[in-house]
Amino acid sequence: MVFKPKSCWETQNARKKDLNTFLQWLMHGSGYFYWIIICLLFFTIITGRYLLVSGLFYGIFYLWQPAKWKERKLSRKPYPAGQLKKEIKWSTLSSFIFALAAALAWWLWQSGNTLVYTDITRYGWWYLPVSLLLSMFIQETYYYWLHRLMHRKAIFSIVHKVHHDSITTSPFTAFSFHPIESVIQAIVLLVIPMVLPLHPLVILTQLTLMSLTSVINHLNIDIFPDSGAKKAMSKCMIGATHHSLHHKKHQKNFGLYFTFWDKLLHTEYTPPAAAKVHSPAKEKMNA
Image (tube, rainbow, N blue to C red; front, side):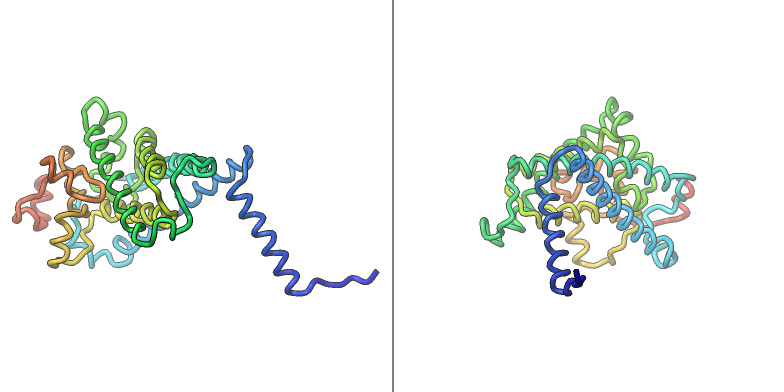
């Protein structure tokens, strides 16, 4: 019998068939092994995204050109020994919990218990940004009231203190939560696709924005140049300065993305104009 090697076309066709089989299994599989793989996959993606984004911002603003951003630091107080390691430890645990929540969301989608759709023409292109804003509004509202609840004395020390142990925040503070806080933060992200039709692109966009804004807001550096646009945006959007003040004044500035709940319910704190200018001498006196 003469051995006849496969042609390049046959090899590529076989690989495509194997890939399609794997993707079908990934989308519609079941069983214990399948769900272990799904959980590990989500954990790898979420943890990798956290380390990549946080590490990138830390590398650019703290290691590559620290002198360039020194004057825009919101606090000059050095990080306590071991703070960054502790934040990464808590964030890794949070990522594991978020991975379990993502696996549960995947199961809800598989079983037809969500309103997630894949055909953009079903609602039209115009609905993509509208649904994103609606989803962010729901998450903002949930988080604002949850955040206020977590600052009650009886709850704070159990649930939210881990996050506020970082008085001078860093990019790695972004996911540094107690496991209970991670669970209750994940709940709303499970509920939203069950009550609001969302395209996967919208879900990915919101999760990406959530990661980026969280890292920027905890960066402890005001990275955006002073301008009219920045002043206008800061009136409605949370930034590093706004959230840094929350870590100093616990009963103010509870928002996640937007400032409207803080404004409406008088929980927003904006320092006087004179206090906005950083004074190293003043900070040393207050240390």
